[in-house]
Image 1 (cartoon, rainbow, N blue to C red):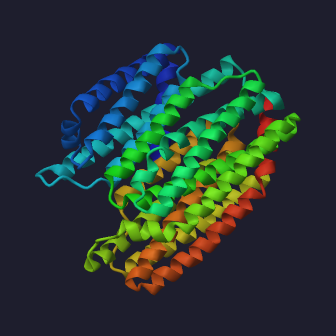
Image 2 (cartoon, one colour; image 1 turned 30 degrees about the horizontal axis):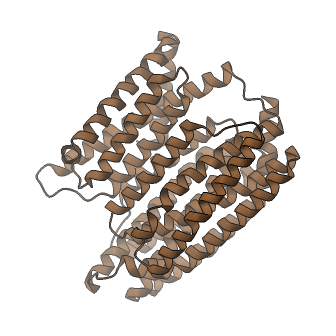
Image 3 (cartoon, helix red, strand yellow; image 1 turned 135 degrees about the vertical axis):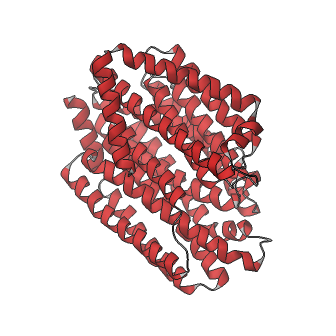
Length: 470
């Protein structure tokens, strides 16, 4: 059964349950999710090795403990808030992290490990659908209780708060990245950007306070936890430097796009000081993207340092399977996003890009077949589910078009980074056909990202139109 049909079934079940049982059903469901989070969080904190054994995969105990801390934070947040929408969505983000961890972690060397792994994956997927349905219902309820109508100045304050939280997550990542990346030049780049990011956060906070607003403690806590979670995930996985650089490259792309949006929101609100601040930070994010691009060679080399030559073809196949999974994820995201793009022009662009992604996926499948392999069904399913959930998340937001465009821009750069490393691995073992495939796809994805930037102004205008009409 496809993830689309499962999602529809889950939503229908939630809707029928609420209709039959009344408004208290959502509160009981939220309470159940709360206690589930608390119980699972305690187990992961106190018995990380046993939790890993039950899941059937090899997991770093520190990573399991951090997942437990995230569960506890979500449970406490739901328990202590009468409108826990943000904390429910934090569970959805956590569910996607859990699925990614399960999809990429190696199986344990013991009898029954695969069965445990499949059961754990099915359980997480089931909880994810429950969390998505409940989050969407609470988001809808919140909009009915407190309409999201905002003036351009109010929307600017809201977006400034979001960007401050983004910087908090970036700081959490940058503080540890230099010791994980394995290359002195890249380590220096991360270290320099850590200090730049701290200054960026200060500048954004000043602009937020100039609007009479303070940062959201909830959003900041969730974002910081997510940043620490990725670093532990990267540390626990093979080829840490490559994964870290590709993720950082995508994150910088999201920040660059976010500040492009902020510039436009500030211009429409007549706040020239924020326009200038956003331009300064945007340029710094662009420079960091260029540093990371220059570091792709070093990241790939360090990732495969010491690896026996006869092992490289297997790694190439695994990387091909990974970029195929990224294609599936982006396809699912855009399928869910076409109708919430903001206007007909952006919708048409996403539709065109969806066709291109389908062709890229097919090219990777053909290359895997030539090499006697095939995509990873599990990794495809996990990342495709993530794409569905992100689409549903943006559907529930009040300022979807601008945020969605920035996120799609980031996902395109996640794919670009993945293909850049794959290209270098192919060159290392003399697989010229895979190298040329990567070069072709990279060029087309960069063109897709550039085309999307032409619609940033349209996405901001669509966002403001929706908010003022709500």
